[in-house]
Length: 92
Image (cartoon, rainbow, N blue to C red; front, side, top):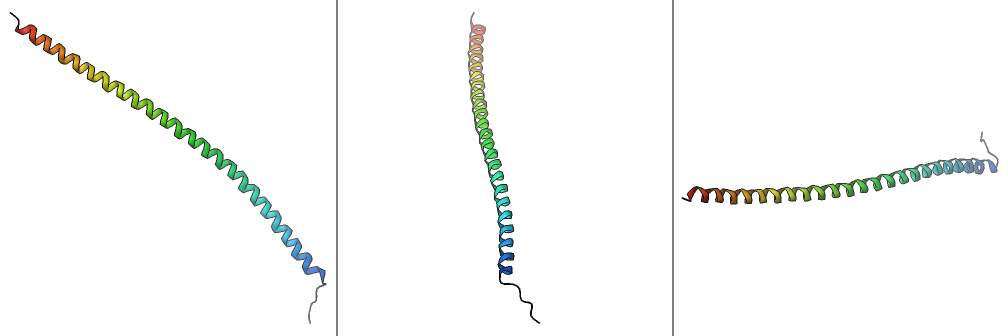
């Protein structure tokens, strides 16, 4: 007992299966494309954040250098003022 299919039926099923696979592949490619766009946006935003961090770091370093310079000037003025006071103590 052999069940013989008509000649066109296996080809018809194969084509239907291929169309189904093709539709699924199209949906998958659309989803990947959407994710690619989103990942591109995230990457751009991360680069902006990195750039902002570099700017903030530069500002902090500049302000730190200004503070160190001010402290050094104050120390120098204090040292000079201390020397002047010592000289005044020794004058008759």
